[in-house]
Length: 418
View 1: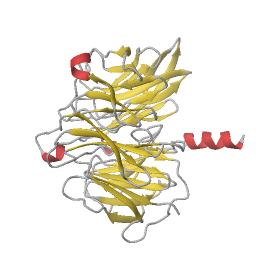
View 2: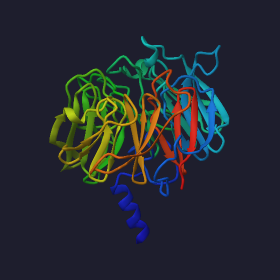
View 3: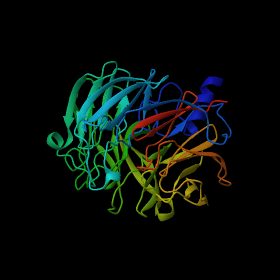
């Protein structure tokens, strides 16, 4: 009984279960780790560096960790090879295991906008990743051998809601692989994860295209619902057959990035560029139907560009748009409890574990702060080595008593266990 109660309380707090970190923001895609007995503060210069792996090339991809391997995406891994690669590394040492070419490098108008961005997902048998061009690639877990691939644009009339390339991490749910080509005819699709065969297509008329968010799972009245945030707003899809159950539209904006936050029947969404954050409640209507009711509309003070939002209990934490000003707000009301100037500058990616926020700033500053709705207090910070040439936009990972950071050409592993 005690074990089940502990699991329930962990999930209620928004934490992910221990075991692996198989996709973007962890098993439940909350960005909150269940790790405990972590350092309560950091020494000057930061926690001890365990290892550093180099040669990843350019990339804003975060990390997936499963059964002793780390997976990420990067391009320009060598001076004479600008192509993009899916790569595997040993978790314990950072030594490379394999790399597989996924396609051409993403070269945008500005250097800061270039390079790979999707975080891989894995079930321990296959590893899946989406290139910025919208190519979904499945590779063998142990060898990196390509098994199958799908082209979102050519096969599904997919489109992006902005010009910055696809960034989603595919969702693995049982035998299904679920992802977002975007557009009107196959807004979200479910594939057989082993073969790539299409199981269903969820179509939303007038959809502006895929955003940068990744799909999350909710349960409403015994009904499994996939929730995604696209360039048109939030969408709820029946997991069984791809029927679109509900939509919640937002005004068009430059880009839509944060992954939705789920608490019971509640869905919190946010967008940057001063758009804001909104809360809706999913309501079961019986016969497999679900609708949504607005709790509060888009509040500009809850905007978040691409650093992500996390929930701990009844509170959410995020960067204020991309201003490098972390905030805490009450989930149910949207009331801001605090907004603070931190040690780092510019856009900040936020994750959490063991009562603390781990904030990764674009200027390469890594901060440890108390996850406390009463006030913002930093208890450690350091400048990550080798940062500054390009923004530090990758989301941090806390797993197995370690802090893992992707910094463009490198992965750094820090020991944060007490």
